[in-house]
Image 1 (cartoon, rainbow, N blue to C red):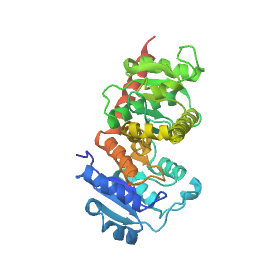
Image 2 (image 1 turned 120 degrees about the vertical axis):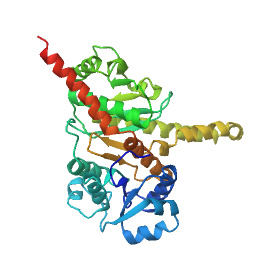
Image 3 (image 1 turned 135 degrees about the vertical axis):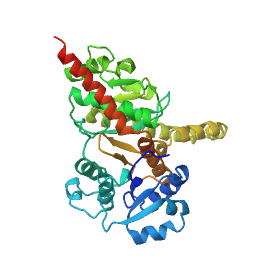
Image 4 (image 1 turned 180 degrees about the vertical axis):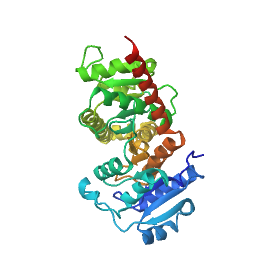
Length: 349
């Protein structure tokens, strides 16, 4: 059951993305079956949406339509998107800012979504900067990584806040009761890194998250699953994310070359096909669709623009998990504990 006093669990930008509105509505159809009690505010071209919903009965029953006369193109600059007040993205975000919906999901322009969310929804009072977080595969299961590009430069306080938000994200979305946390660094030794990252590590060790703070981790630890939450600045995080995506594409291409090189290799593929199908399902990027801009007064989830209905449904699942498990309340509680610690230390002579 969705724990929310809002009229709608989520507002959906139905016109954002490469394959909108069909892929978006396919995703809502799947999500409506998974979350039968949830209500969605579907924002977009009302005539197109009404016609498309005729063949998607579950989505039709779960959604209320709101007409939006405009769309934010994928190549529009964020500053220009701020001026398009009648876009499907803007009206969906307005619904969150106005308390109608607990969160928003969009496959539209990433820069525009981030800019609109920061300005319209605004950050939580205790948070200096929001961060972009996503789930990544590892050898030991899913891993949360943040920041992935929202903040190129960060100080130690930002990194501590990212750790707190990553901890809440892992609890809400991955269902981990005590997620382990690591700071991405150039080495695992305590003396490695600059003053900023060492100060963040010291603060985390002394905080209420100290028991679950692993310390420093390196790039290979992300894929190894050494920790459940990997914390870094947006510049490093985005580079690491794109490097990982490139490595997966390389592996997929090499496997294709190997299994098509000779007749014996093709026979080997037929024998290995069941295991390869399981690997393909495990590494399916649709399973990891849905990056989250966390630290705002509402849930904001960015779906990949080129995804299909299955991928968009996963992005909705991520948003629903955050709404259902009181994500923002967890952040406030955790930040409150950190503030109490700082206040206590300030009184010690």
